[in-house]
Image (cartoon, rainbow, N blue to C red; front, side, top):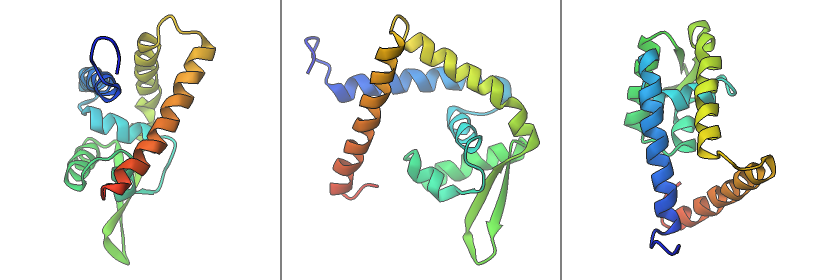
Length: 149
């Protein structure tokens, strides 16, 4: 625990909440939410992914991801194809319209990261990513012991 009494999880939560506030504000120009933003950024690197897999990756419950994907689909940013052999499985793809705004979305995300890591050298930034990546893996193991994926 830090001297100011905020535990590590609390610090991570503060960062996450501020990131969501920022993404929600910046995403309004596209007519989407922070959840839609995250989904689209993921799809920009991973086309033809099953919707439930995206939900698990980002710990978004199934109903929340279904609502977010529906909004993205209604806006024309995402295309969903239901798997014929399993009507519950939907494959997600960015549409051309969705792909057109990815560069602007990447700029928005980079600005947040640059601001959050202001003053940190490239070496320190790399260390932050390595440390957080390790923490993600360790936290998944801990959560798995309590029945969470």
